[in-house]
Image (spheres, rainbow, N blue to C red):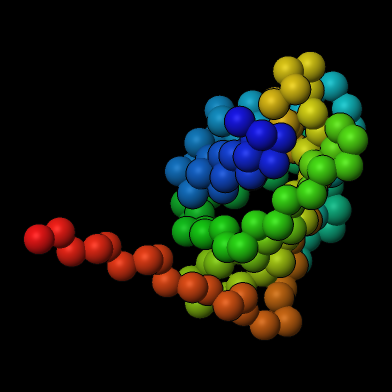
Amino acid sequence: MTDHDALVFANEAFYAAFRDGDMTSMEQLWASDIPVYCVHPGWNPLFGRQDVLRSWHRILTGGARPDILCHDPQPHIIGNVGVVVCFEQIGADFLVATNMFVRQSNPNMWRMFHHHSGPAASPPDIKPPDAPTAIN
């Protein structure tokens, strides 16, 4: 698995934990040995693992967890830091997110240390999945 593949996988794991309401996976995705930060849409910034994870617990167990999809992830790696900029779709609404990861001791292990999401100026150009090919 390439560095970029591992980074995209970590980003996909974040959105899977979000969609599934999987607090255990969400806790494992966030870095534990460096400061972490989070800015949810319409919230004040959160600083520190305890406050960030408390916010995710509130979102994932609050009963109105949004069904979220990630579109057009753009991964970038700078040394031991990975950045993924993507669109989040919740219903008909779109947000833009910046997800930042740090490489842990395992070279392909990325842990989130920053998430920031806010309204998008316009929706992304979403391409429909390729149609299956008929087999004769």
